[in-house]
Amino acid sequence: MVARIFYFLIFVISAAIFPTVCTPTGDEPALVMLPLTSRGTGLEPCITDLGWRVQVSTFRLAVRDFEFTIEGETHAKRWLPIKRLLVPEAMAHPGHDGGGDVTGELLGDFLLDLVGSNGQSLGNAALLEGDYHGANLAFRSAGLMDGLNSDDPIFGHTAYLAGTAQKNDLLLAFTAVIDVSPDTQMVGGLFNLKVREDTVATLVFEVLTTDPAEGDTLFDGIDFSALDADGDGAASIVPGQAAHNMLMKTLIRHDHYQIAVQ
Image (cartoon, rainbow, N blue to C red; front, side):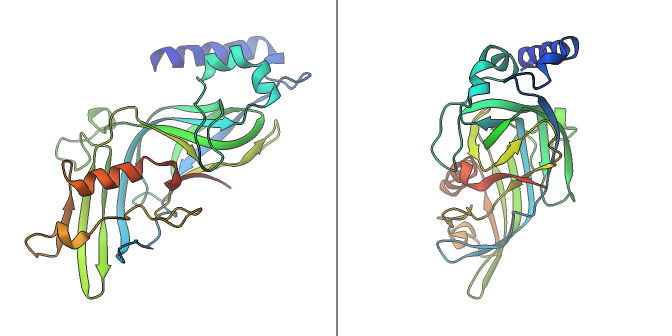
C-alpha cells in the first residue's frame, strides 16, 4: 500500500509539472476529483427467503482502497503505463457490468458507520475521464489504527451488525460479528457514471440489504430461531458458526454494494 501511495504521489506531481497530463489534449483524459461519502439508506428492512423480516439498526464495516473501473476504453489503453502506477488492473468479474480497467481510486483505511452517521465523508476520489461501470474495495479488520478500544465489538473483526428479526409472532434481537480474510476484494459493485473534465458530483457508498437485480437479501438462508438456543429472545452470529460463514460469503459479494451519484 505504501508503494501505491508513493506512485500515486508521483502521478499527481507529474500532473502538476506537465499540465498536458491532466488536460484533455487530443485523446488524453483529464484527472477529475470527486468527493466520496457513505450512508445507510440502502439498509432497508427486508424479507428473507426463509420469511424473516430483518431490520438493521447497526452496521459497521472496515474496508480499504476504493477502486473505480471502466470497460477497457481506448484512452485507458493509451494511458496503460501511467494507469498502472496509479492503480492495478482488476480482473474481469461477472455481474452488474463490473470489472474491467481500474482508472480511479481513493486509497486508505476506512471504518464505516453506515447507520449511526448521517453521511460520512471519506475523501476525494481521483478518476480519469471515462464511462464507469463498476467499483471495488478490499475488506480488513478494525483495530487500534481506527482509535478503537479492545472491548469495542468490531475490534479485530471486519463487520458488526445488530438489529431485529421477526417471523410470525416471534421477534428476536440479533447481533453479528463477521470476519473476512484480510484484503479479500469485493469486485463489481454497482457504479454508473460518465466522468468528464467538468463533471460535478458526489459519490455515495451504500450497502444494500436487498440485491436490486435479483431480489435476494443479505440474510438469506439464516434461521434466526436456531441461533436462540436458550430462548431468551437474543440471537448471536459469531465466527465459527455456519450462519457466520453464510452471512460472510454474502457480505463479500458485489450484489449488495453500490456507489450512488448525487
